Image (cartoon, rainbow, N blue to C red; front, top):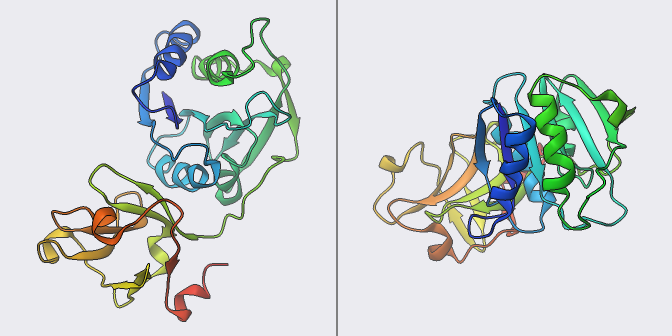
Length: 249
């Protein structure tokens, strides 16, 4: 399957244009819209979200990943095979957390480009044809050069910041759930939040933290928007007890 992961949103034509390319390159391969609301221009947040969300996809899945504020500049394109899944996208850090946490990794630099390559839409013109080709069962090795690793790498340690806010107002963080225990309080913007295992354990309107279905620590409120209640935005720092902070690296 082909899995799309972008900051394109739904109100513009970009997702549709990219899917049109995929339909030509891999007409019989299902396309899954995983997320088109990665925080705009933010490959750092995207890198942690991609690693968390990719884990439930089967081996052989091909992720077309485009959060690419440097498109048209000197950044390169990359293909990554990590623990049996494939990732195609810009080498700007977006694929680096997946690469760092995987047990088995191979990396290629994209050397091919089409004659009609747009300067500003490599997702459609460069990455989509290559991802479609891989998903359709081919590996156009003449279009890649194997390299020792990615050029841009973010720190793959857990990230104590808000990465993403969903439409409910729940704030996903870059902390994996295994870092913390149920007795730990979490602090953000001066407010200390208790742990609740599920929404039903919280009082109506109560803000809390829990481990979401992607395995990340999430700040939520029962039947309310935690983002509005607490004034949260992407990038806000999450503070942990010292015993937990020591486990970030």
